[in-house]
Length: 105
Image (cartoon, rainbow, N blue to C red; front, top):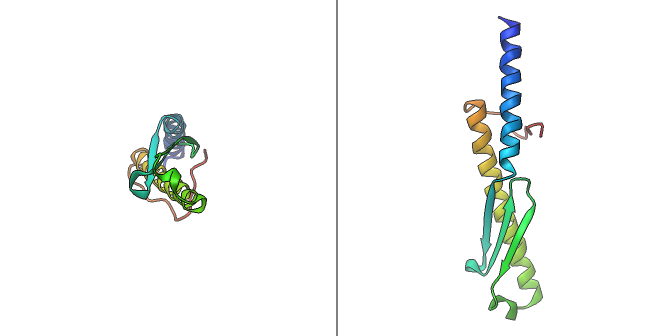
């Protein structure tokens, strides 16, 4: 086993992961609830960047609107996580990571 070759490969993967981290900032995902009444847009850093609430849904009770916002936000988060995993899978060549493994970003 060539240790220097393994070290070089690890450094290359680390560089690719840093580039991917920068790319994730540009990634966006939208979560929708209430049949499109509430839309939440989130970036790859899991920051909410826009919320769109239809005028019609504003006639509903406050608790219903709150639930729809939570549902749309959770939907957007799941979409970001899937897209992030897809991008990381490209870098690792499809290498499966252990459950719960977090990339050092």
